[in-house]
Length: 244
Image 1: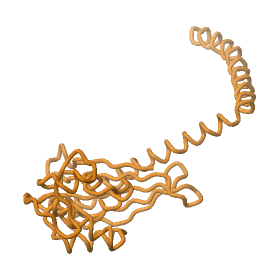
Image 2: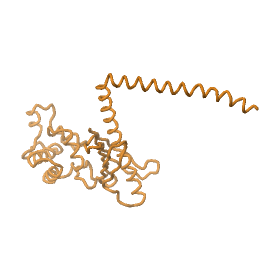
Image 3: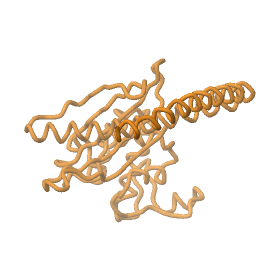
Image 4: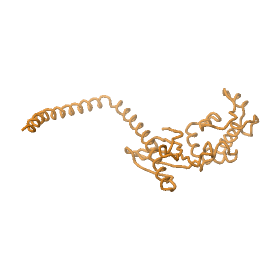
């Protein structure tokens, strides 16, 4: 009897609450539809923002999937797959994994090797020749410009408030200081150059590209990942890069 006395009031309450919730839901939908109709343009703009945000976070998720793949392959002592593909939130996510040792160390390569790799990265032969010479002049300690290169006087004459660094390149974004090139070009070059060959053996670059249903590229996220040996820190993300 005591159990039934507790259940009966609950059933009565549920009979009152459920229709109320349904009416509130219906009214909410009606209000939402009317509002969406009256501000259709704003709604479309909000949808675009939502889709852009999804593409960005889907690409970030793709990077972490690539890292998980690296760790799983390392546990099995096998080489990671260079290309993976999956679907997240209706977007196609392409994941590319590259060993840093496969890249050219930008701080030790000569001008000829730099030029060749710049051409492989998509630069025309003329800009590649100029940028290769300027990279050497940027990092070396002398003040004599190579053919096609540039030292302090050249930067000052070009209106820059700085001269050649005369030190190793610490970040590939410095290429934008060495030569006026678009950041998208720098992102592309990051697939071909590494900063140091000393730590390349334990580092990988993981790049995730999201594409919509029409196959259009929506967002690119990449990370340089250092694989550790400690169980409590199996990996470390050295650097993130994003563009959309």
